[in-house]
Image (tube, rainbow, N blue to C red; front, top):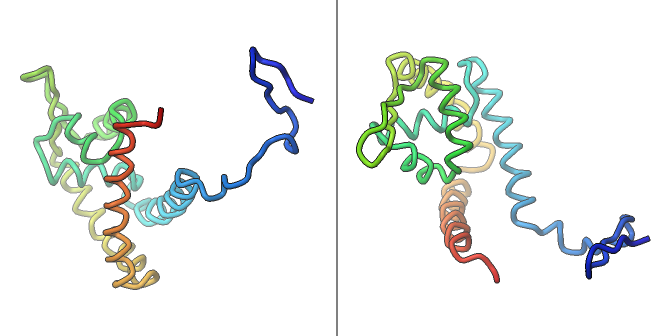
Length: 165
């Protein structure tokens, strides 16, 4: 049975959908792998009291501080709304300081002393997890794949700027 919606006829039973090719969807496959890898790093970083996503933010801030929220969002390829939610949690934990609005209405991020201590502790744990990851994958394969991931990120960003008509 199909439901009429304006000029379009929408399928209502699974057999009516044409799902051919959806298993090769880049988004589906990247998200699937990202969730599995995130779980691996979350388990490792659990003893530090932060998640891998928070670790990534702390590393990004440490590398570029003081950094604006928009610059960090660009670096991490994350939308500002999602980043702002994560920043709120890190600020509440006392790991980040957020400046008052400065020039061009931007706010800047820096690690607090507690954030620096947490990052230092987490780096030790992360290095062990990273070593385990690289050994399991193979150092040469990981180096090549890491380069491909960077290239794919640039392709996705360029496609986002000019979506299909």
